[in-house]
Length: 573
Image (cartoon, rainbow, N blue to C red; front, side, top):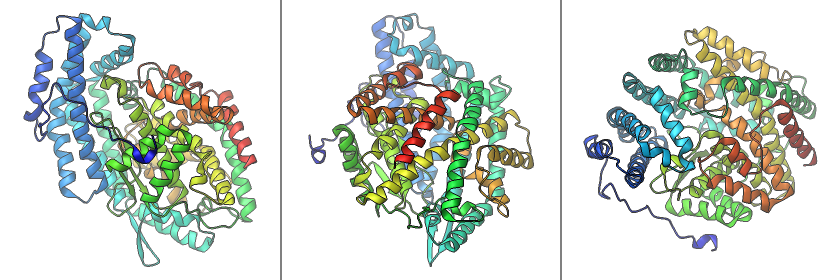
């Protein structure tokens, strides 16, 4: 059907919980958890009904929590929204945790669970992991972490700078770093830097407190460090910390030399004696920053048309979000930083949040989150919530592949051929820059949690050392050492979702392979992409990647092969 005639999906009819339920206290949902805990499972049919009710209860509660989070991040200055989220985290979530553990044990101990079809195999392994790491004494610590982790969003969301009589968010101000006027870039860079450094000590103290609590969680669960605890928590069945170290080494050897080549070329094209940090985003042709759209509404319309051209269903997904008002795209003061696609498991339609300010980076964020949204919609009809609980290596494959596939249709954003060429160049350069940054952040995280008693000074020294090993040695940081030393603080994942970052690197490699397939055979590549996404998490990561026609591989030879492809495409643009 034409995109503008899309029919809006509705929630599934509830069979366990009443439609009228209002989750405003633990008592409002306690009886349903009690029902599941006490219900006898005397047959396979009993187990299937129990799983269906378990799935429905989790979907309803998670969607409720999702909207609380969405409203809070859309306006961090709305005390009512923040209080509602904090109430859920402190008063309801801790009550759910012990029931969740009892339900996990009930499922594992049920003799009929052995007869479940193969789609449940990974979910059952996840349940065993959850049982392994659950500790009653960690419940209040997890609640405390949830509240403290959101402090980062409040602090970052309040950061602004004044420029030309306007108060700008740091995302908006960062666009000025693409201005051809080097004096202006210098000035704005230092305004952003000074504003970040203003909260440096506060963020250092916040992070130290997060590390302390996380380490205690790990010790309580019988682990020597939080990294090892988190790998079990994240259900990393397909790779280990040693594989992450191999990824770091492979990126350092295969990608950093290419990054140095690009940086050296940038310095030459800009005709600079010294390439400074504020020279890294400007177009080397001397042309002003690309302006693919003005407001979020225009960004949404252009994305719908772009996606429609790749596959009609992709455009339909974005039109659905638009019509349901499940998007908040524009940057504004008081809004939390970053961007996300939040799956809402009962409705089956996700919410896209971002901080658009009119840049190419925003287009990339939009198509990235759009890829997540397509993934959410493709899995909405899976009959069990556990099948939709995607590991990031699969989730990010969906989003990062869409960044590259959509690039073949960016004429909807850039009608001028020269602007389109510049946009593609910037995107491909971003890939070569991103992989070392991802490896850098991940290696830093391993160091942090392998040395949980570290001081702030030791942490700063460790970051500086790791950063230098993954960055171009062409950039002159003299005089900006304080900015480099604190640059890790801009990565919200370190504060809010520890160890959720290397997945971007693994998925980026997969996305390059999907894009390479798309350039060779678009129809077949999209078919494989859809097939992989529709399977949710019902098989291993490597098996899911195989459905997409690619490999789950981060060996040095494979990374070198893919980066060579990117470099060749860059030279063609």
